[in-house]
Length: 480
Image 1 (cartoon, one colour):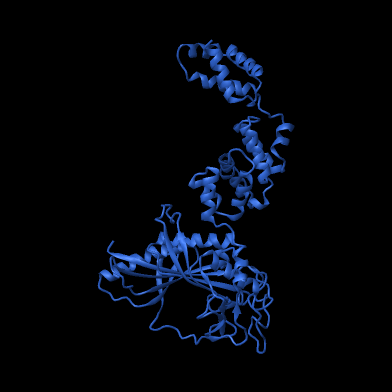
Image 2 (cartoon, helix red, strand yellow; image 1 turned 30 degrees about the vertical axis):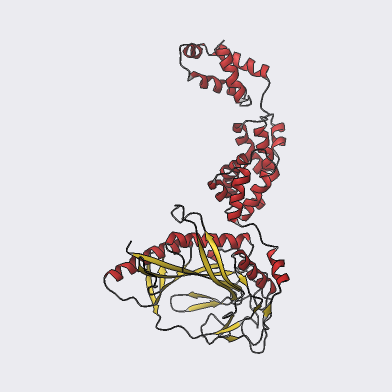
């Protein structure tokens, strides 16, 4: 590759709170347009903002989860600009004293293509807290403004330009989303605008240190779109550089249907937002004790959880990745694994059975009628030889449908595995007596006929015979 990509992401994450950042209006998605509004978030004269403590604490929590230094003295600032999405004609944000700075995040896992990434650390410049703007909807001849979103607490996470590929950017966003969701800071639902991303990308000749001309990409509404847009932009910029074109700093949009970026505006100079300290809000201070109290609430992060699942429960890296994709799923498995002799079997039933059923039903594991304790009961019934894995495949869907535990269904339907040696011996003798032709074939050297006899014994016992004992008894009687 002749050029090296230099990529930095600016990620906006809505904070999950009951109310907006500076007023008591509900912070909710999907309400009728312009119903969650009040004089404060609409910028009426004479009103005063009141900061949302929960949003501030959540921002500090996000900073601690990403290794940031937490400012003991911080403040809010006014960012002045005129646009229909900001009713006050200024946005309460943070400029020179953000809550969090100088953090980092370990980049691991796989890229969009599924290929494993080389592990690296990506710097986080700052995390600051501000109020979100309104939502603009553009129609054929005019535009509509919904101010329900105006004033919702919004974190901006500014990453260092440490990313070098679309796959690394995809993994960065995936890891960041996991951290925010495990920390219960945000749901990060991009379809609801709870997580939004701008990409800054430039190219430079391989081996050089000086950055190239920065191009900003906007309107990226999914991780897949981010990946596609970066790949496209790397090729576009490389072709222009090869032609001797001098790139100019510009902002480009992304058309996902056409799979290409387009020019929105050329940046000749930086915007002058005339920042100054927000006069209606006092500075925010933290003591060491207050920061440590927030630190005490930090959860175990997905990467640490994956390593623990592999080390403590004997899972594969794939199993651990699937089970930590969701915080509630990870907690479900963790609870079940503590109740079984073989946690790997519990993982298999969750991945191959439970997720399929919850997916079909459209529910989360938190609403699943098969609790971790009930799943553990099924796994233990298999491992103890009470039922076979084949019978368990019939028991499990009924557990999901009725909410009954495995032992109850096994008892009600008489499904307990037959492990009585005399009963199995009798069943084997009966099968051999009724299949003289196959018996002759086996005696003539066709060892594959053994599986036929196993199937006949299982059919005779309605699948309840212990398979291991059946094979053992067949070999005993066949070779007698």
